[in-house]
Image (tube, rainbow, N blue to C red; front, side, top):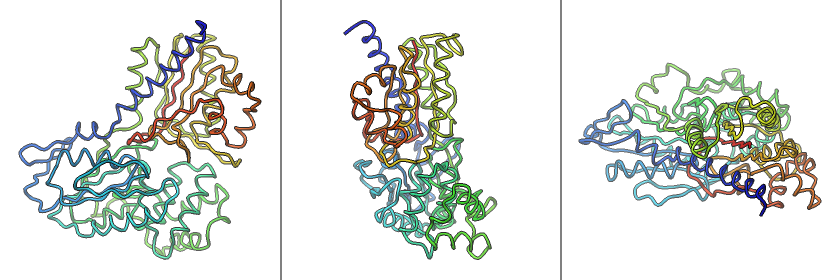
Length: 447
């Protein structure tokens, strides 16, 4: 191995170490133990205190990719005080629990298990009263996992709508605005079901801006969206004619006031609900920043709120890499540029991949002439799109190695077939289920 290839290998290892440090900072178990504890039979959640002697029952309800890990922490804190619970998680994202039941379901397109789990969860919620303390565990993925179609709609209606929204490039805010208006449990309706029971919502944020009404489609939060906005979204993305007739009619009836809106700010059902975000993307970025500095890199966190078309975001990041090498701005090498958030991919091809693999390939094409530049882009949940990879890693040799195998990078990008591309050159980044979810981390190292 030459000195140059040895340096590149070290940079790739550094990128993984930086990512893992960011991931460790948003471990749900650690985060919940940090903000919740029991002292003298009083549950303290940040600045709130709940005298457990006043409650006859404690229910734990939840949904999301981090649900099992969050539930594990709550069981450790409350132990046999928990009466019962149910948490819906993505297939394979399970833990051994004693008092809280786990239901596995599909993500991002919902399935029958998600419906069955949501029905069980809602049934338990209906049993809550003013002598019941409800603890709600919410994390990314909860929208798809906790699926309960509105009256008159079917699972197939929601599945088709979800696929259309995922493929057209809609943002998570737009997607969840629509999801809330097709549900019997989202958009504050879970809060309505448990009322007047007090509810503590522990939230792991996977959305830009940490908007509580968007995370898992806000089952216990007042909704800002409307049926009218749903119609605007489907018009904007040109998917109106592809929706099922029942979904389109549902939106039209809602916009005319013939179907009740989601719950809004000021509704009394929210009086006894306390929300706290236990961790978000910025926590992961700041921990990653600390690790990068320890490894000897001058480090800059761009933002935890980056959105937009993935290839456009890749263009901006690689332009920054060129600036670093050309002028030493915003940092002189060795430099580490960090960013987070959630980009979107407008699906035009029939390939397999995800936004992080798309980012890595688009970046690789643009840094093929920049020596000693490494880019790692990955989802903190360990999943990128409908694949078993969290993302991919790229450097200035990526395109060279691909061309040597007679691969055409631009064609793979056009076909949204980035998984196959990185699989062929052995540069997929796989973590397995991480049991957390705070969007994506992008790490760019430049020497």
